[in-house]
Length: 202
Image (cartoon, rainbow, N blue to C red; front, side, top):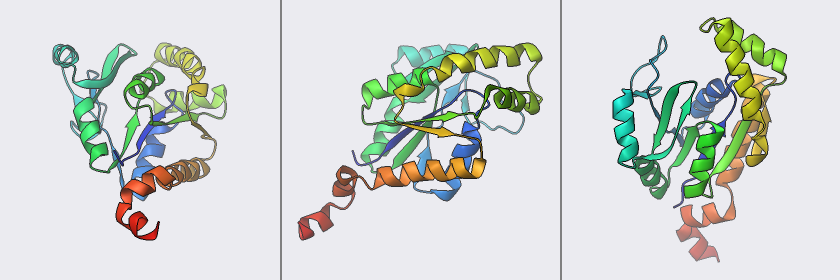
């Protein structure tokens, strides 16, 4: 397979979704894997764009059929990634980005050990709480649970290859693009993507 698989994880409120959205605009060669989820759509979200929104019963059936590369229950909702779609894209040479949590990242690495792990950290817990509160979508009780979950999630940061601290969105995006571009220039990747040139030169 000549495509790179990027696994981007972060605690809720760290800015992962915003960074990934901006990255995809500037790096059109990277495709976002659209996960399936049982949580209801938020305002502005559309089926097949942000997520494939499915019923719990349908999600469980997909688990039983072994269709997921990874899946997890997060904050009472299920999330999962299509195994076949990822494999097909990587085999075709496409770069794919997964926006998942640390549990999903562990599952992905067990099947695709060459996956490139990127963890997004907030600059502080106070800033993380401010961002979660600023959304205006969750109650104080939910925000409290998310902050506790975030601290537990951040303990897994050492399992990832790269860490980006999202203090300045502009700098964090530059860092994320740097990881993607450098990964695409690795010798093993270039040998596959430019096999004809390598055979002529070497």
